[in-house]
Length: 180
Image (tube, rainbow, N blue to C red; front, side, top):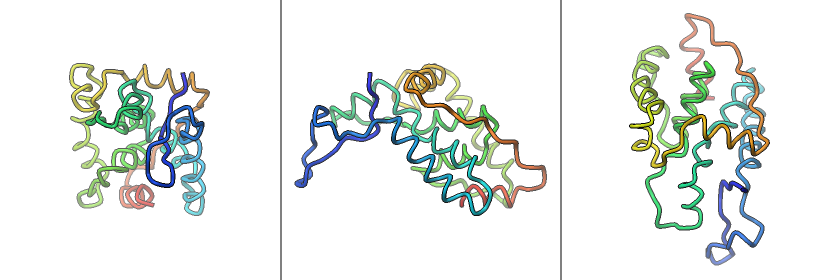
């Protein structure tokens, strides 16, 4: 199965059918975003973190319901990013997790520039994402993180190894790097 990130429209804004051949494959979208994010982050030494965030940011688009939504615009209520947040946290990639979670909803405030406080605020949501009984309510689809990452891998997308965590006491620097 080909998974898509986006549909396409003609010059009048009318949705083109999948058969037109210009819908964007999800694997290409993830690679493009990852490469662009890495390029933007290179000047401040965060290209590997940005690349991983780009690869995970739309992980929920591998869900069957998201793919159905591309064909049926009446389908709503799909959170396609939070499973990428969970994947980033599981890889100990906290800046990426905050960037992924915030790419549609906005970045957390990092109260007093304290990443640990913001992580504590995110933990209940992450616990709900890891629980199949509550994840479907948040995401709008039933697939687990394992199912989505299996589809990602089957789509020939390879995730880079996570980088090491930021040193302790670097909360302000971590917050700044995340926003960059």
